[in-house]
Image (cartoon, rainbow, N blue to C red; front, side):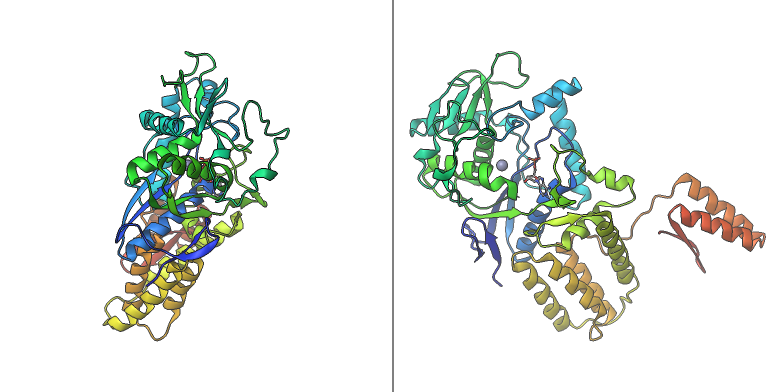
Length: 460
Ligand code: AMP
Ligand code: ZN
């Protein structure tokens, strides 16, 4: 079956063809680890996860890289402002290493909770300075760089197709108040290496052929992707905010250095918005996964919410929508649990439905269609319970919702005490009092069911 992916480079859905047979190399722009990743960021790691699972179901092996930006990302995308990690380290009176490793650790925990399959490599920018310097040297040899008083810059006018990815009208972009030209030759030029203003003041700086300093943000992704995936690879993913600057610059510097096509398919995810605006760290007021967990939602409730929308469409976050996702996931799990798994399976039924399911996902990762198809399967009279169960578990290899897994629920001490008290009251036939306690337990978020085998406790 063909896989079609929307390629930002051509603005078309294209049939996917890997460079190597049955192997796909993917690079995802990773987190800048100066703060918690918000749920908008998580959406940008969700769609590569679906992409990987879909490719694997189609028989491909995956090599996946997500970088960790722990140096060089400045507070402004136009090569000015402070390094985000250095700034947080100063504010929190910590070392840059401490900041980066703390937020990376939290991110990895969230990543796991979301059931995202780990990449094969998590390279850190600060551990690939040599590779970045080598790449800048190559660009220098080929005449694509120039020096200003604050660093080494890439001359975008020398790269023929600059701005192709974003369909940029390069000539139309003029320096303005927000983006001053400064010593740059062209407004779209960008820093490859920045000099330390006062060497010794920054926590993270290195020697280079051009002076003490640190790499620009874009060069890390070119250097690390090419190190782990080769000079040309299959798929590059990221949020759509990276199209205009970051990915445009990645293409320019990589292709200028190698003379080869850098990436065949560029996939971009739309934003998660809140009240119509992009959820963003710099604006504040964002939600993290732990904030949602504190409010009683799970990572998989959020995953369900992400599945309900196509990755190229903006998704408006609201608690109403998250409640809907949470309830749907609970109902889905209950339905699957209640299925009689002892019926005889007709293989033909499984194959047919599976093909249909995969065809939705092979069509540019249409998760909303695949999810509603799962519901259709569960409602279908022509399928028996065992077939439904089998299909749900197969579909879950891509959906990643732990559908067959029994949820282990943590019972708070207070609830446990109330359950014990209720048992005693029931033993003494004080049913009215026992019922009052059941209501108290309900208010604390738990449902009690009395069965022949004993009491069953569920989350409300
Ligand atoms: P950052 O840590 O800011 O470098 O961003 C990590 C990833 O999250 C990038 O791919 C961004 O494009 C993406 N991103 C940032 N904000 C959002 C959002 N509100 N919705 C979806 N993706 C986002
Ligand atoms: Zn990147």
